[in-house]
Length: 337
Image (cartoon, rainbow, N blue to C red; front, side, top):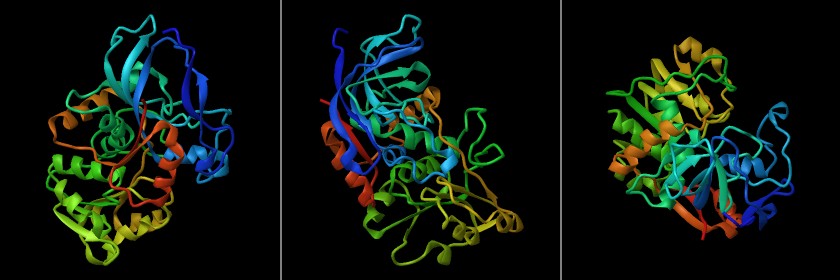
């Protein structure tokens, strides 16, 4: 590689989508164990706007220092342009995808760019049957579904709770997925179906045909009926929205059931214990080998990733504005020319 600069989206301050600047930035230098990926597409995820806003949704003592300027983003799909001298698992020209250095909390992923340096442990080969747009949409949402429902896959301390998260058996179980049309939700629904669960999808009515097409056995339009009022005796609730309202799902679960909120805010631990319900969370982590296993499901068509909308890298501001409007059906992706 001879070029020293690239186009990237950078932040020089925290704020709304208007602080996302499309500008020249240095091409990252490789460190041992890394490859340089020529990015074809970037998947958007909530941590991207958490960083942009200065992590204001986190408790103050959780907010890391962020060195400006910073390039946001973690999820990429592209082609390897260079490899560090100690790398032998990948070669120049390989198509790869991955979630880069998460959780780093300081923008280390640096994915909103033409090039990104990626530790090989974070990468998997892109499924041959998947284009770069769909591959870029898969890593964080797919790994979240995998680590919540199939295998945690690491021994790092859990920053969200004292105990280690443990997935529960899904075969023949009754599972509700709240926020089922979103990035994590639509993949969690399909992973649970793959494992043999009976899945109830919760979303607005506009998403019913989409979710039934992904395999939902039942559908609840939350604009017409609150799921906690109409469902009982569930084995598991995956609440992809989480937050302080997630405790309402305790009444839907049988004794011995489990509630997995994806975002922080649950505050009814005493009541959950009285009801014999396990409440558990975890923080998704980069994992190339798990992503390779998930990629096999994508390549086989067992699971498919949906694209809500796509924007050029230069239009990242508009992409974040789309995310802020909510009611996504799948993932938002940036394409890199």
